[in-house]
Image 1 (cartoon, helix red, strand yellow):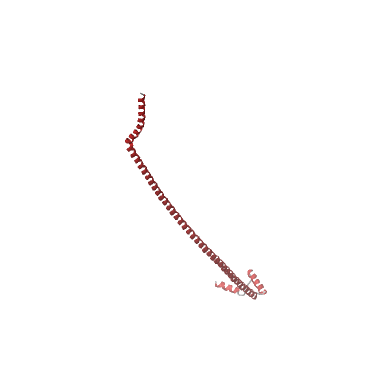
Image 2 (cartoon, rainbow, N blue to C red):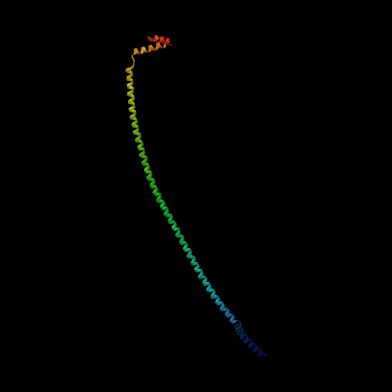
Length: 199
């Protein structure tokens, strides 16, 4: 009996070892093709995923490069526009500066001409005033001389024509008599009588 149990035990051990291999064989028979197919699909999926990832990286790189080129070109274009505008403004400022300098020169020249004209006019006016003053002074001297001569002539004539003292005394006496109605002219009464008869 013990031999039988040992044989069974030995057979059981051998069965256990052979059973593991059998399970692998059975598993290989049942699932081997599916597992290989699955592994192939998994490998293809990995390859496709890697290819898509590479494609995505390539597209991303292209898009990034394109975006980078666009941004760079836009920045360069903007820089050129800013530079052109700045150059235009600098040119306009330079032109304005030149125009202001020219205007300042013209204004200074005109002011100088105006000062010279004012000075000349002042000199002319002063000369005219002096000339007119001299003419008026000469005229005044001439008029003064004429008036003086006329007065001297009048005084001389008055001195020559003045009545004597006796003539003045007779004149005043006659005036006094006339005022008192005491003065009778010879022949005046006969004339008055004739005039009364004629009426």
